[in-house]
Length: 280
Ligand SMILES: Nc1ncnc2c1ncn2[C@@H]1O[C@H](COP(=O)(O)OP(=O)(O)OP(=O)(O)O)[C@@H](O)[C@H]1O
Ligand SMILES: [Mg+2]
Image (tube, rainbow, N blue to C red; front, side):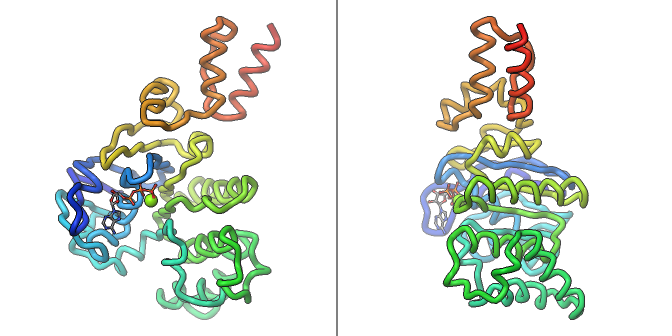
Protein backbone atom coordinates (compact mmCIF):
# COMPACT_ATOMS: atom_id res chain seq x y z
CA UNK A 1 0.00 0.00 0.00
CA UNK A 2 1.04 3.58 -0.66
CA UNK A 3 0.17 6.47 1.59
CA UNK A 4 0.76 10.18 1.37
CA UNK A 5 0.21 11.90 4.69
CA UNK A 6 -0.05 15.66 4.42
CA UNK A 7 2.86 15.59 2.01
CA UNK A 8 4.33 18.77 0.54
CA UNK A 9 7.52 19.29 -1.41
CA UNK A 10 9.36 22.40 -2.47
CA UNK A 11 12.37 21.95 -4.79
CA UNK A 12 15.55 23.56 -3.53
CA UNK A 13 15.81 27.10 -4.82
CA UNK A 14 12.13 27.21 -5.75
CA UNK A 15 9.75 29.71 -4.19
CA UNK A 16 6.60 27.65 -4.53
CA UNK A 17 5.77 24.17 -3.44
CA UNK A 18 5.54 21.68 -6.31
CA UNK A 19 3.03 19.66 -4.26
CA UNK A 20 1.02 20.87 -1.27
CA UNK A 21 -0.72 18.99 1.51
CA UNK A 22 -1.34 15.79 -0.32
CA UNK A 23 -3.13 13.09 1.65
CA UNK A 24 -4.25 9.92 -0.04
CA UNK A 25 -3.83 6.18 -0.09
CA UNK A 26 -3.43 3.80 -2.98
CA UNK A 27 -4.20 0.15 -2.29
CA UNK A 28 -2.43 -2.80 -3.82
CA UNK A 29 -3.97 -3.70 -7.18
CA UNK A 30 -5.43 -0.30 -8.00
CA UNK A 31 -5.17 1.20 -11.50
CA UNK A 32 -4.82 4.94 -10.99
CA UNK A 33 -4.63 7.64 -13.65
CA UNK A 34 -3.11 11.06 -12.99
CA UNK A 35 -3.92 14.09 -15.07
CA UNK A 36 -3.39 17.82 -14.80
CA UNK A 37 -1.90 20.80 -16.54
CA UNK A 38 1.77 21.35 -17.14
CA UNK A 39 3.58 22.14 -13.90
CA UNK A 40 0.74 20.72 -11.80
CA UNK A 41 3.11 18.40 -9.96
CA UNK A 42 2.41 15.08 -11.70
CA UNK A 43 6.05 14.12 -12.20
CA UNK A 44 6.90 15.26 -8.68
CA UNK A 45 4.18 12.93 -7.41
CA UNK A 46 5.78 10.00 -9.24
CA UNK A 47 9.23 10.98 -7.93
CA UNK A 48 7.88 10.92 -4.39
CA UNK A 49 6.73 7.35 -5.00
CA UNK A 50 10.04 6.11 -6.32
CA UNK A 51 12.14 8.02 -3.78
CA UNK A 52 13.74 10.28 -6.43
CA UNK A 53 12.22 12.97 -4.21
CA UNK A 54 13.92 13.61 -1.81
CA UNK A 55 16.95 11.41 -2.55
CA UNK A 56 17.85 12.78 -5.97
CA UNK A 57 16.01 16.09 -6.07
CA UNK A 58 16.55 17.86 -2.81
CA UNK A 59 14.27 20.40 -1.21
CA UNK A 60 11.91 20.91 1.69
CA UNK A 61 9.97 17.74 2.38
CA UNK A 62 6.92 17.90 4.66
CA UNK A 63 4.66 15.13 5.87
CA UNK A 64 5.24 11.51 5.00
CA UNK A 65 5.19 9.16 2.03
CA UNK A 66 5.08 5.45 2.76
CA UNK A 67 5.41 2.63 0.26
CA UNK A 68 4.69 -0.85 1.57
CA UNK A 69 5.08 0.53 5.08
CA UNK A 70 8.50 2.08 4.37
CA UNK A 71 9.02 5.76 4.93
CA UNK A 72 10.62 6.90 1.63
CA UNK A 73 12.82 9.45 3.42
CA UNK A 74 14.54 6.72 5.41
CA UNK A 75 14.89 4.17 2.61
CA UNK A 76 17.37 4.28 -0.25
CA UNK A 77 15.76 4.49 -3.73
CA UNK A 78 17.52 1.20 -4.59
CA UNK A 79 15.53 -0.51 -1.86
CA UNK A 80 12.28 1.05 -3.09
CA UNK A 81 13.15 -0.09 -6.61
CA UNK A 82 12.55 -3.64 -5.40
CA UNK A 83 8.83 -2.89 -5.53
CA UNK A 84 8.43 0.36 -7.45
CA UNK A 85 9.42 0.57 -11.11
CA UNK A 86 9.14 3.95 -12.75
CA UNK A 87 9.15 4.81 -16.43
CA UNK A 88 10.26 8.44 -16.47
CA UNK A 89 8.73 11.20 -18.55
CA UNK A 90 12.17 12.09 -19.86
CA UNK A 91 13.14 8.72 -21.29
CA UNK A 92 16.57 9.90 -22.37
CA UNK A 93 17.44 10.47 -18.72
CA UNK A 94 16.36 6.90 -17.98
CA UNK A 95 18.51 5.26 -20.67
CA UNK A 96 21.86 4.04 -19.43
CA UNK A 97 23.03 1.79 -22.28
CA UNK A 98 23.64 2.35 -25.97
CA UNK A 99 22.09 -0.91 -27.23
CA UNK A 100 18.48 -1.95 -26.54
CA UNK A 101 19.36 -5.38 -25.13
CA UNK A 102 21.89 -3.86 -22.70
CA UNK A 103 19.33 -1.33 -21.52
CA UNK A 104 17.02 -4.12 -20.41
CA UNK A 105 19.87 -6.26 -19.08
CA UNK A 106 21.19 -3.42 -16.94
CA UNK A 107 18.26 -3.44 -14.53
CA UNK A 108 17.98 -7.22 -14.48
CA UNK A 109 21.67 -7.71 -13.73
CA UNK A 110 21.50 -5.15 -10.93
CA UNK A 111 18.76 -7.19 -9.32
CA UNK A 112 20.95 -10.28 -9.33
CA UNK A 113 18.66 -12.72 -11.16
CA UNK A 114 20.07 -15.98 -12.51
CA UNK A 115 21.34 -16.13 -16.12
CA UNK A 116 18.35 -18.21 -17.28
CA UNK A 117 15.89 -15.89 -15.55
CA UNK A 118 17.56 -12.84 -17.11
CA UNK A 119 17.38 -14.36 -20.60
CA UNK A 120 13.72 -15.31 -20.11
CA UNK A 121 12.71 -11.87 -18.83
CA UNK A 122 14.68 -10.06 -21.53
CA UNK A 123 12.99 -12.01 -24.31
CA UNK A 124 9.54 -11.86 -22.71
CA UNK A 125 9.63 -8.10 -22.19
CA UNK A 126 10.79 -7.43 -25.75
CA UNK A 127 8.04 -9.68 -27.05
CA UNK A 128 5.38 -8.15 -24.82
CA UNK A 129 6.14 -4.70 -26.26
CA UNK A 130 6.41 -6.07 -29.81
CA UNK A 131 10.03 -4.90 -30.16
CA UNK A 132 11.99 -8.16 -30.42
CA UNK A 133 13.35 -6.89 -33.75
CA UNK A 134 14.95 -3.92 -31.96
CA UNK A 135 17.00 -6.11 -29.60
CA UNK A 136 20.44 -5.32 -31.09
CA UNK A 137 19.70 -1.79 -32.28
CA UNK A 138 21.56 1.31 -31.10
CA UNK A 139 19.20 3.31 -28.89
CA UNK A 140 20.35 6.52 -30.57
CA UNK A 141 18.98 5.24 -33.89
CA UNK A 142 15.45 4.68 -32.52
CA UNK A 143 12.43 6.90 -32.93
CA UNK A 144 10.87 8.54 -29.86
CA UNK A 145 8.09 5.95 -29.82
CA UNK A 146 10.52 3.02 -30.09
CA UNK A 147 12.58 4.44 -27.24
CA UNK A 148 9.46 4.76 -25.16
CA UNK A 149 8.71 1.07 -25.70
CA UNK A 150 12.28 0.13 -24.72
CA UNK A 151 11.98 2.22 -21.55
CA UNK A 152 8.70 0.48 -20.67
CA UNK A 153 10.13 -2.98 -21.48
CA UNK A 154 13.15 -2.36 -19.24
CA UNK A 155 10.89 -1.57 -16.29
CA UNK A 156 8.35 -4.34 -16.93
CA UNK A 157 11.21 -6.87 -17.17
CA UNK A 158 11.83 -6.22 -13.47
CA UNK A 159 8.23 -7.21 -12.72
CA UNK A 160 7.75 -4.57 -10.02
CA UNK A 161 4.74 -4.83 -7.77
CA UNK A 162 4.00 -1.13 -8.31
CA UNK A 163 4.36 0.18 -11.87
CA UNK A 164 4.61 3.95 -12.21
CA UNK A 165 4.58 5.50 -15.68
CA UNK A 166 4.95 9.20 -16.38
CA UNK A 167 3.36 10.04 -19.74
CA UNK A 168 4.64 6.84 -21.34
CA UNK A 169 2.62 7.21 -24.54
CA UNK A 170 3.48 10.80 -25.49
CA UNK A 171 5.48 9.71 -28.54
CA UNK A 172 3.30 6.76 -29.48
CA UNK A 173 0.68 6.43 -32.22
CA UNK A 174 -2.89 5.55 -31.15
CA UNK A 175 -2.41 1.85 -31.90
CA UNK A 176 0.72 1.56 -29.75
CA UNK A 177 -0.95 3.62 -27.01
CA UNK A 178 -3.78 1.09 -26.84
CA UNK A 179 -1.22 -1.74 -26.82
CA UNK A 180 0.53 -0.23 -23.77
CA UNK A 181 -2.74 0.23 -21.90
CA UNK A 182 -3.79 -3.34 -22.75
CA UNK A 183 -0.48 -4.65 -21.35
CA UNK A 184 -0.99 -2.62 -18.18
CA UNK A 185 -4.56 -3.86 -17.87
CA UNK A 186 -3.39 -7.45 -18.09
CA UNK A 187 -0.62 -6.91 -15.52
CA UNK A 188 -3.18 -5.26 -13.25
CA UNK A 189 -6.00 -7.78 -13.66
CA UNK A 190 -4.06 -11.02 -13.98
CA UNK A 191 -1.07 -10.34 -11.78
CA UNK A 192 -2.54 -7.84 -9.33
CA UNK A 193 0.07 -5.18 -10.12
CA UNK A 194 -0.62 -1.67 -8.90
CA UNK A 195 -0.53 0.67 -11.90
CA UNK A 196 -0.09 4.42 -11.53
CA UNK A 197 0.03 6.30 -14.80
CA UNK A 198 0.34 9.97 -15.69
CA UNK A 199 -1.44 10.44 -18.99
CA UNK A 200 -2.84 13.40 -20.91
CA UNK A 201 -5.32 11.34 -22.92
CA UNK A 202 -8.29 11.40 -20.59
CA UNK A 203 -10.24 9.01 -22.81
CA UNK A 204 -7.60 6.34 -22.19
CA UNK A 205 -7.76 6.96 -18.45
CA UNK A 206 -11.55 6.69 -18.43
CA UNK A 207 -11.28 3.45 -20.37
CA UNK A 208 -8.60 1.78 -18.27
CA UNK A 209 -8.09 3.49 -14.90
CA UNK A 210 -10.70 2.97 -12.21
CA UNK A 211 -9.50 5.92 -10.19
CA UNK A 212 -8.50 9.36 -11.34
CA UNK A 213 -6.36 11.92 -9.53
CA UNK A 214 -6.32 15.45 -10.88
CA UNK A 215 -3.54 17.80 -9.82
CA UNK A 216 -3.62 21.53 -10.31
CA UNK A 217 -0.82 23.82 -9.16
CA UNK A 218 0.44 21.27 -6.69
CA UNK A 219 -2.95 20.50 -5.18
CA UNK A 220 -5.12 17.45 -5.45
CA UNK A 221 -8.38 18.80 -6.86
CA UNK A 222 -10.10 15.53 -7.79
CA UNK A 223 -9.73 12.07 -6.37
CA UNK A 224 -12.49 9.76 -7.45
CA UNK A 225 -13.70 7.10 -9.79
CA UNK A 226 -13.01 7.90 -13.43
CA UNK A 227 -16.63 6.93 -14.13
CA UNK A 228 -17.79 9.72 -11.82
CA UNK A 229 -16.26 12.50 -13.88
CA UNK A 230 -19.69 12.92 -15.48
CA UNK A 231 -20.73 14.51 -12.19
CA UNK A 232 -17.80 16.92 -12.29
CA UNK A 233 -17.71 18.11 -15.88
CA UNK A 234 -17.72 21.76 -14.80
CA UNK A 235 -14.66 21.29 -12.60
CA UNK A 236 -12.76 19.62 -15.43
CA UNK A 237 -13.74 22.35 -17.91
CA UNK A 238 -12.63 25.01 -15.44
CA UNK A 239 -9.28 23.27 -15.16
CA UNK A 240 -8.98 23.16 -18.93
CA UNK A 241 -9.15 19.37 -19.03
CA UNK A 242 -11.39 18.16 -21.81
CA UNK A 243 -13.72 15.44 -20.65
CA UNK A 244 -14.10 12.62 -23.21
CA UNK A 245 -16.32 13.48 -26.16
CA UNK A 246 -18.60 10.55 -25.35
CA UNK A 247 -19.40 12.21 -22.01
CA UNK A 248 -20.27 15.47 -23.74
CA UNK A 249 -22.38 13.64 -26.29
CA UNK A 250 -24.28 11.83 -23.53
CA UNK A 251 -24.92 15.04 -21.59
CA UNK A 252 -26.09 16.78 -24.77
CA UNK A 253 -28.50 13.99 -25.66
CA UNK A 254 -29.84 14.09 -22.11
CA UNK A 255 -30.25 17.85 -22.28
CA UNK A 256 -32.20 17.49 -25.52
CA UNK A 257 -34.45 14.93 -23.84
CA UNK A 258 -33.34 12.20 -26.23
CA UNK A 259 -31.67 9.99 -23.64
CA UNK A 260 -32.35 9.29 -19.98
CA UNK A 261 -29.81 6.56 -19.17
CA UNK A 262 -26.30 6.50 -17.72
CA UNK A 263 -23.82 8.91 -19.29
CA UNK A 264 -21.10 6.90 -21.06
CA UNK A 265 -17.44 7.36 -20.22
CA UNK A 266 -16.01 4.99 -22.81
CA UNK A 267 -16.65 3.94 -26.40
CA UNK A 268 -18.41 0.72 -25.51
CA UNK A 269 -20.92 2.50 -23.27
CA UNK A 270 -21.37 5.19 -25.93
CA UNK A 271 -22.22 2.48 -28.43
CA UNK A 272 -24.90 1.15 -26.06
CA UNK A 273 -26.28 4.66 -25.59
CA UNK A 274 -26.47 5.32 -29.33
CA UNK A 275 -28.18 1.99 -29.95
CA UNK A 276 -30.79 2.96 -27.37
CA UNK A 277 -31.23 6.48 -28.81
CA UNK A 278 -31.48 5.26 -32.41
CA UNK A 279 -33.92 2.51 -31.48
CA UNK A 280 -36.58 5.03 -30.42
N1 LIG B 1 14.10 19.78 -10.66
C1 LIG B 1 13.32 20.83 -10.38
N2 LIG B 1 13.80 21.92 -9.75
C2 LIG B 1 13.02 22.96 -9.44
N3 LIG B 1 11.70 23.02 -9.73
C3 LIG B 1 11.17 21.97 -10.36
C4 LIG B 1 11.94 20.81 -10.71
N4 LIG B 1 11.12 19.92 -11.33
C5 LIG B 1 9.91 20.50 -11.35
N5 LIG B 1 9.93 21.71 -10.76
C6 LIG B 1 8.77 22.61 -10.57
O1 LIG B 1 7.79 21.92 -9.79
C7 LIG B 1 6.48 22.15 -10.29
C8 LIG B 1 5.84 20.84 -10.66
O2 LIG B 1 6.57 20.26 -11.73
P1 LIG B 1 6.26 18.81 -12.32
O3 LIG B 1 7.36 18.51 -13.28
O4 LIG B 1 6.05 17.86 -11.20
O5 LIG B 1 4.89 19.08 -13.08
P2 LIG B 1 4.14 18.17 -14.17
O6 LIG B 1 2.71 18.17 -13.78
O7 LIG B 1 4.82 16.85 -14.27
O8 LIG B 1 4.33 19.00 -15.51
P3 LIG B 1 4.40 18.48 -17.04
O9 LIG B 1 2.99 18.21 -17.49
O10 LIG B 1 4.99 19.64 -17.76
O11 LIG B 1 5.27 17.28 -17.10
C9 LIG B 1 6.66 23.11 -11.47
O12 LIG B 1 6.43 24.41 -11.02
C10 LIG B 1 8.09 22.93 -11.90
O13 LIG B 1 8.62 24.10 -12.46
MG1 LIG C 1 5.68 15.85 -15.79
